[in-house]
Every structure is written in structure tokens, then in C-alpha cells.
Length: 308
Ligand code: SF4
Image 1 (cartoon, rainbow, N blue to C red):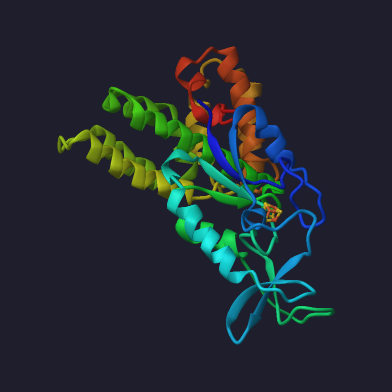
Image 2: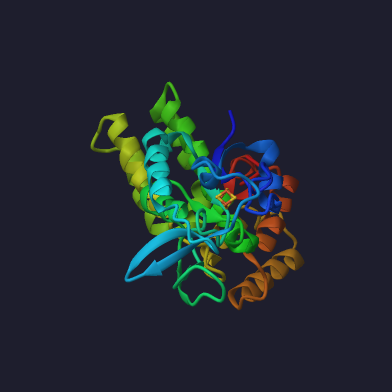
């Protein structure tokens, strides 16, 4: 079993763009060996050929329509029908993430141009989301949804891959025979990763796992999953994870030379000023995990977030 991601088909799977081409996304290419991609092209889904006339969103009197850029032929109704039928058959729980084509009037989730009319030199009204991308953003609540353009940003990409990885890992907890035991193991191996994202949520999750109220395990899993959504929606803030780094550094204090300790403390100061990245310090710590063969840290997902 591999993580499952819904992806716009033109991102390396199908020559389905309006001009008959396909695109290449480095992130999608990197993930291909370790992910099950499920492709979708809503424009082909409503019966359009490739190549075809480009379409655009035209917003007039507050109403957005999907139209042929030059012909003005309207595709709003077939697209809305297609979206409804897609969601009727979409089992969100089986997926781990979504990657859609940026800026497309159909697949785009952000920064999609809305025009005042079709034809030459149209007036630009605003930028929001495409028809299908907007529906995915609105209705897919438990998955991280990104576009290929935003995934070029290192922080956004890291967050996306981490969320996909944790979501996939948690699906195994829910499918396990001994869910209670599996949940404890999940909480343990993700402890420092979750601490980096949101320390308050981690504390609450610790209480949920301890289950002093002796709740039914399915109820415990549900409560825990709600807190996981808080983690997915949190950000790794540059310069703010000193606490996590110090916790991890504590494991090696006795084995390191004074010079190595001073070097790490100096790097933490640089990190606080935004001059060194969190990933760079994690790499340094990972080298010590290997050198001192620290079994608890070896299993920490913070040090092996992906490939999955
Ligand atoms: S952006 Fe979406 S609708 Fe357009 S070609 Fe790609 S998959 Fe198809």
C-alpha cells in the first residue's frame, strides 16, 4: 500500500491541456515511485477534446461562468454537473492529499484570473479559484490541497509532504487490529514532529492517548484525529522551534565534545535570527542519531518524513 494522491492529469500523466500538451511537475515526478496517483482532468471529463479552445472564467454581475475564451461558448452547467458527479463517487477517506494545476480556470485553487468578458483584450476582474479547484477546497476537509505552483516553495512543499505522510501513517492506525497499541506507537514516533508544528496540540494529544477516562477506542481515535487536523493546519515557523532542537540536543550532551556543543548552540542562535534553516539543524542532529545509535530518535518521523 502507498499514499494516494488526487492529481490534475496534465501534470505529467496526459496530454490533455487546451494546446495538446502536458506539463512536468518536479514534485509529482519525485513522488511517482512512492505514491499511487489518481488522475483527473475535468475539462476532458465534460467531453472537451485536446487540443481545444482555451477556456476562461468570466464574471458578470457577480455570476461566474466558464466560457470559451474567444467563442464565448458556455461550459458552466456541464462543469457543475461533472463536479457533482465527481463528489458523489469520491471517497475522501481513501486519499492522503491533492495536487492540482495552478492558475487553471478549472483546476486552480488560488490566483485564478476572472475576466469581465470573453474575446480579445478582456478586462481582468479578480483572482480567486477555478471551478473544480474551488469545489475541492470547499468540500475536501480532511486532506491537504495544494497546486503545483505553490509546491515550488520549499516550506509549502515540506508541509505538504509531511501532512501526506502523517495522514497515510494514521490511516494504518485506524486499520490496525489493535488500534490502541497502534495509536500509542504512532504518537510516540511522531512526537517531535508534532512538537515542532504545535506544542499545545501535542499536549492535548498526549492526554487523549493516555485515555484516563477509559473511553471507547473508536472515540479516542476520533478525538485524536481532530487534533491531527490542527497539526496539519499549523505551520513550521522559522526560528520558533528552538524548544524541539534543545530537547533533541539533550540526548547527545554527554557524548559530544565541548567544541561540538558550542557549535550547535551557536547554530541555534543563528537559527533564531533566521540565518540557518530548521532542516539544516535536523541534518546535524540526524548525524548524531546515527553516530550514537539512539533507538528512540531513529524511529522519529521528524528525521524521516519522506519518501513514504
Ligand atoms: S488544468 Fe485540469 S482541466 Fe486543465 S488540462 Fe489540467 S487537468 Fe485538465
